[in-house]
Image 1 (cartoon, rainbow, N blue to C red):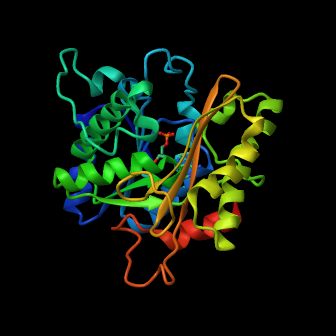
Image 2: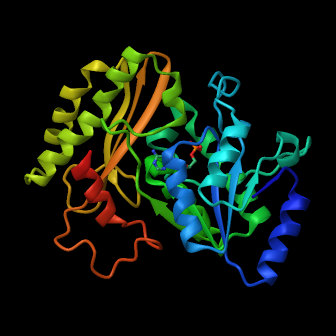
Length: 309
Ligand code: AMP
């Protein structure tokens, strides 16, 4: 496996792979790889001739005062893990390789970036502009056939799908289910910030989602009732930034679950901000005619996920 740091080296390698007829899979990450990231790598390795894992702590997607400096950086471990899982290239550029000093172009998706993590009071639009700009740049650097993203960051996934559609990128966006610890906590590089006691309290988030999922599976469709169940579980976190049920495609709030609905939570435990979500789909046969790789309705795995929270 190669570890590369410049766009020129990366392009030279990928041009050769493309000439050899190999498809290219991209797994963008900020590093501190865990089983969630590795599940994306596994899927890319299974589906592509070449898998590129990018490790880049993207400064433009951090809000002022957020954990940019503290964010865990462990490139040697990441390289070893990516290699073990069969990746071909780790691309780990320095910030000045990605952003020229006078970089002045931003890719900005409207509408769906303005709710949940993007709410104006959270300066969230700035966060998503950072995400879409860096992902557009990575797509241009790598020109992947497929790019793999986790359902764990459901809004990010929806925003990237929108960008790909609106800007006619040729890359297929592949959604991968959220990987959890055995006790239900969604894996995240930020879990490393949690003390032992905080980690126990953080379980309230997956408990809340499980309560919603169980009630949904038992037939409840009213959002106020489902939200009450979730709130009752969330007493262990320090603050709930949002608990929302939104249409899976538009991210608009819903009052009743009649279509695929995202249940999304952002909460603070100590100084750590954690997000998690599940997808609920009331359609009787959610697997018919739906290609989970090309539409946002990858419901079979998501529903399975909600059952196994
Ligand atoms: P990050 O390094 O946090 O920017 O995440 C890189 C990619 O890994 C994103 O597509 C995330 O959605 C995905 N990811 C992070 N945590 C998980 C998880 N627990 N399960 C599945 N995918 C994940």
